[in-house]
Length: 438
Image 1 (cartoon, one colour):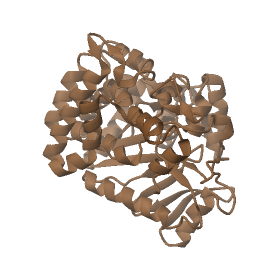
Image 2: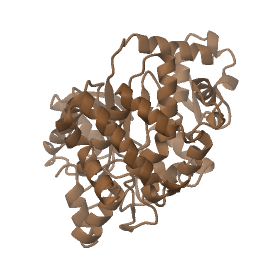
Image 3: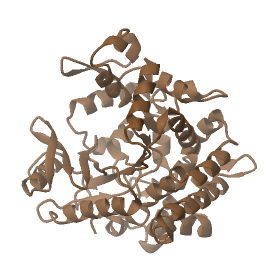
């Protein structure tokens, strides 16, 4: 089964030729102007917002459950409601950063255009700065209900992951299984540095929390069988085969039987379907199972890099810019891979379990995580300048370079400075300044 999957990944990448497209998934926490949680239901709910955009001719509703709209396809990307009513924009595959920035701008302008009918705040942070999980809604989608029930038994913070966290994910092309393996290993080894570099979840219940990246702590206490790094890769020679084996042997949260999702939690895909290789719908079953994995990088017909927190507008394009500069410029990718070669997968795994507290200031061997992050930034800056030019580099990666190289700060610390100094620890004032729709 693994070899068939690998062959399929190879074929999918070959159809793209030597294309190097990039896409991004921008999640936002959504709340009412009163700071109360927004719901999918009701005349002014998010489900009705998506239907209203369809009525205006902006897109087409794709997913509907019990009369509620969950996604809308537009020319600038797919709008999707996540479990806690977070709103995500998934851009189409694009050729450069300017096209992604244009998608993000159209997304924002579209929502501003319906603010009178649907007044909301959209906040780019890795964790909700005000609400706890039990104060927020879980959308009544069958998949989300099954996931929620599963996470109650697999860890202590799964409810927070679903209801009150948000991320930025970046999707890149690969050219065949060898290129995929190299990029997969590099992205997994780089995961704790990306988490620290894009830490942006330092507030809880309206006050400063104990962690700069609380979202990272959440993932360490959600379900270790399907998050961080597959256990099958924690040896001296991690490779693509080990990753794919890890997915295939991962217990499923649910299976689909006669168009209905059935909870499981213990059975792997191959145990459930020992003859999967010979089933006509093997790829559909495999895709459903793969979607239940939440590792720091996920293999599809593209490579999905999942580590960064959601970002405020100032830093929103920085994760996309950094990943493009590293992974899509050949020289920079070589430099980055050499830098990551110093760390073993077990060392990276342990760092993923500890980086949430101090972020870039976490001790690491004879230096700190910040030292590595600065080197990564330099590599990305050079690569992005070669790909898209200095002006684009400055506008997208520049804001992060400024605070991290000059001030030794992550976005989380920048946000805390805004909150405590500029806003006098007034959360309403802070939310007004970082609201994506302002």
